[in-house]
Image 1 (cartoon, rainbow, N blue to C red):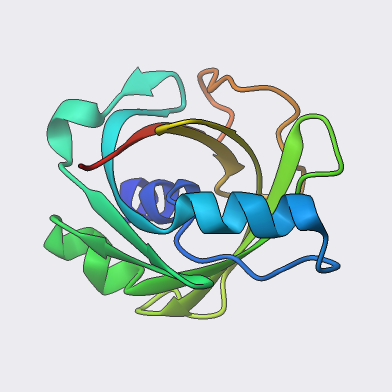
Image 2: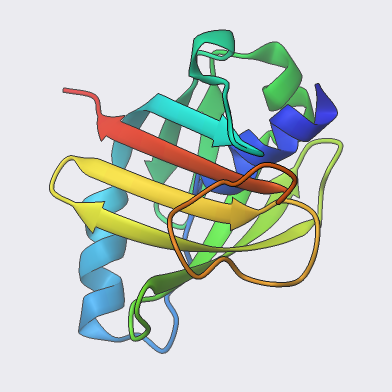
Amino acid sequence: MRMICVCLLACLLTGASLAGGSDVVKKDLKALQGAWAVEALEFNGKDLAGKHKLTFIFKDDVATIEGDDAVQKEYAKIGFKLDPSTNPKCLDITVAGGVQKDAKIEGIYELKGDELRLCVLVFGNERPTEFKSPGGSSIALLTLKRKK
């Protein structure tokens, strides 16, 4: 359960600091504001979306997670730093509240309209390079949809 919680929060980009103050970072950060529901969740190649109903609430550079008590306990709030200058775009997450406070997670993101994809390495220091979660990889892949 702890691994699932780590994956969810890590992927669930819940907060973003402006990296370098670029216009693209500001644009992506602004686009993230509001509520996002997790539509798809994979970890180590396994589909976990049906097990966890989560919503991420982005406000400024912090995200909170709603819907799963275990996840909220582990990752009450997360902050993130966006780097859209890379391909794929990079994301650094720092857990700002909860049992995993101060944990750091590296990942990539893709933002297209009302869909946000996150791919993060939950255990380890090597950033994913593609939006895949193969078995045994410790990679979480999330797809979020904007709530209207």
